[in-house]
Image 1 (cartoon, helix red, strand yellow):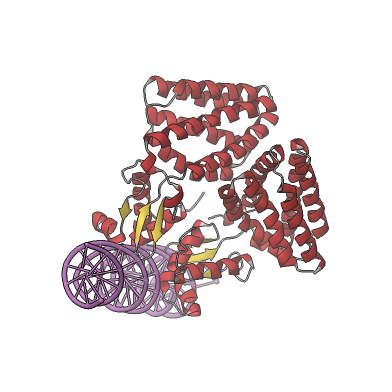
Image 2: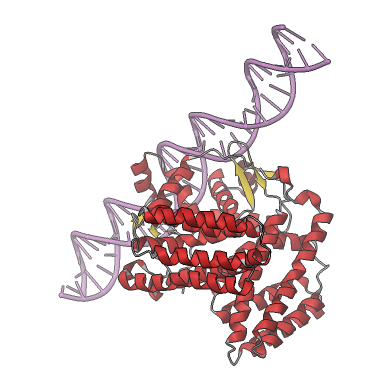
Length: 227
Length: 227
DNA sequence: CGAACTCATCTTGAATGGAAGGTTCGGCAG
DNA sequence: CTGCCGAACCTTCCATTCAAGATGAGTTCG
């Protein structure tokens, strides 16, 4: 297995800030400073600084040297292209999986869907989304492209911020039905149908984005705010 | 346009090390230390440390806390999956471009190919590869997914390391012929043919990879070196 | 001879102090 | 009132120092 790298202060700060950003505790446009965060968590500026660098590379905040560090606004175009990237990759994934079905593929996917249904019935939205992600992750694993999934997951974080703004509006039934349709197509080895279903499934995010931009315009980047 | 962020010491170190890694001046498996690099460039450990963090996130080196920092070996599986990602995205790109051809699309692409032919005739391998990349970049721009191309470019760096090991073996004629075939399919609005051609074109990297692994096994990650 | 232990010497992690540049706001001249 | 200008106060950047874990060679004990 991997050496589990020991958890450093810096990596803890990264996790904290990342969570704060995704959950909108830190809002797009908010200004933070090294000493501010450092004081709040009882560490020196150094590990905070390193956390800023990492998050900056992940596109979650922007360091403007000698000026300030700001939580990045969400780029509508960026989210659309993240979706483009995700769709490109996942289409290729389901093609692979549908074109080369293993014995337990269907059982595995069906299992995730069942667990998802349970979370949905229990009203556990966070748990539901976790398993939603797990469904797609499993598809990637079945296609043998774990690394590619990592990439999708990294970029999904921008969409996650959007999603967090609209919790509750989630249409669990649709999502589950679509997962079933995808699984059915995969089970049948129907590549064309599988591709069509996954595209339909992922297209749902587009509507979510438009609605969210309308509801929270301040959180999104405009042409001139894109310094 | 973008504020050009002032260049800091740290970012300069990043650029230097990045170049050293791609050009194999720093070989996979080499061990470097903060103080070593710092002394060599006449700066303190601090900016070097920050450069390490950035490069570490880009997958070019690995920081083993309290132990050492090593230039990451090339992961054959990682390169294959980078290729998978690239193919997924570029297939989608040419589909878009071929499905919605603009007036000057063909002229633009043909221009790049001509320039490429010139570099090839002049024996300028680096220039040739630069324009090769430019061809694909232009396709992305035509599809309106500049951001997605950025991502492909970021991940291409691993393949660039492989390519650097095999300079000279480049098959310029094949590449140019394939670019022409892609352009022709795009010009004809033939989505199916365009997809087939781009897949064929990108598949060439697979051969390159296998050969390189055979020639430089030490530079590649093995099952147990993947700590 | 071999295993375990100590310690000098590496490494990176974190804390702190100052340096250099950016922003802001109040005073002052016109 | 308007526009300039400068000083106080911010920010991030870099250097320095200390701390703590990992490593490896030499030694000692069984």
